[in-house]
Structure formats: C-alpha cells, structure tokens
Image: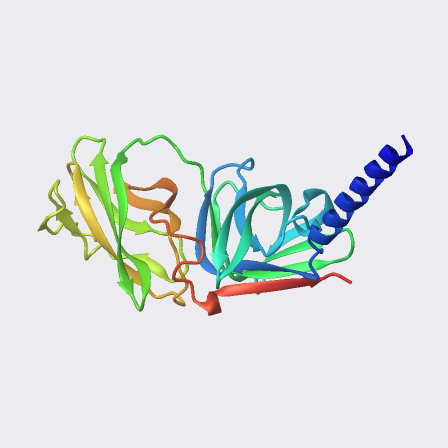
Length: 298
C-alpha cells in the first residue's frame, strides 16, 4: 500500500514539474496597435454604436476588460467627445511584420454628444481610455467625421446599385470612383446638386460623371442642369470619379449624402456608411499609419 502511495506521489510530482516547465511565462509588456484611417460614420440614432478596432500582441490583459475601463473619449485639436465602452468583442488573429496580433472591436456608446442633424469633424483624432489602476492609453486613429442624420425612406430618389472602383497606386489599393444606380421616384425630373462623401479632403466629381450601359461601358455624360448639377429624369447607372485631396491615409467606408432639388426645394437623401472594398487589416498599410501603445508590467 505504501509503495502504491509513493508511486502516485511520484507521478503527481512528475506531472507538476512538466506543467511548470511548459507553462508560458506572462509577458513583460503588451503592445497595442491602431491603424490611422480617414473615417466617416452616419449616426442615425442615439442607440447606434461606434466601432473602433485595436490589435494586441497578447490577450488576457486588463486593457480589454470592459469592467476595468472607467473613461473613454475621442479627442482632436479642439474637440473631446466622452464615450462609454458598451462592449469589447474579441475577433480573429492577424499578422503584422511577422508577429501575430489579437483583434478586439471596441463598441462605443454616446455619453455626452448626440445631435439630430449636423456634422462633427475630428482632425488627427485620438482614442483614449482610462483604467481603474490609473493607466491611460492613447492611440492615434486618423481623421474622423460623424454625420448625424436619420435615414428616411426614399421619397423622391432611390439607388439600386452601389460599388467602388479601385486601382493600385504606389503599391496600395485606392478607391478612385463610385458607381451608383440612381432612380427618380417622381414625375418629371429632379436635379442632383452634390453627392457628399463626408470624408476629410475627399470629394466626388459630379461634373466628371458618365452614364454607363448595364454592362458597365461608358455611354454619355449625364444631362447637366442650367443651374448646376445633373438632371435625373430616368433610372441610370452612373460613374463618378473621386478627388482625393486628403493626407493620403486610407479610406474605404463612408456614407453618402445626395443633395438634390425638387420643385424648388433643396433636400438630402442619406445612404448609410458602406464598406466599398475589403482587405486584410494590415495589407498595404504604411508603418507611418500605425500608432502604438506599450504597457510594461512591473
């Protein structure tokens, strides 16, 4: 019996030793990355959340535990927006410079700011978080535009197709044009005076637009209005080039505000923010567009 007990103890000691040897030592630091982008979001109600994505070199850290976050805000040169972290949702893993990072999506609620209409631009925005242990994290996230407007049912105008055209410029895929199918829902015609992308430094060239065949071949320029803009009298597929006067940072998701005039009244039709093309998180991203925060464990 005593030999059996000794045998069990020996096996237990051996297993414990193996666990100690194979246990991964806790990291001495955690690195957090964010990608600087030109961002625009359409905020349609106070219940809508804003999503920002961060990348961590290690999991199991207080930095992603919602209960440890006591303050959140987006700040710019002359703007500070208090937010509430509604949830932190873990995602997949991704690679950057040969290292694996864990993806975390931070969903933010509006705490102090919600407008029924209007636009708020934050140039060179930073996402800042305060923690119970006194740690403060700050990461540059690029330019941010928040457009506050309800999405109403289409009354006078609607769209039936929407996609982006991209090319590779300087080794990076860039959005250079939008193709949109527009359909009037009125008798007669209306005038589109502007299509707003809501991105800092990026605009749509309405005058450079062309009408396309269903197969995408260019047909003719759209009919212009004597007072400016284009006349929309029937359904059509249009291609409009983009004018990028931004700082060169990437953009791929934004809303559209179609400004039009009907029966002498200026109106706006809003299309919610849309992802025009997708690629892996760090694909074709310059090192200059990556912001970093490192937390060292004592």
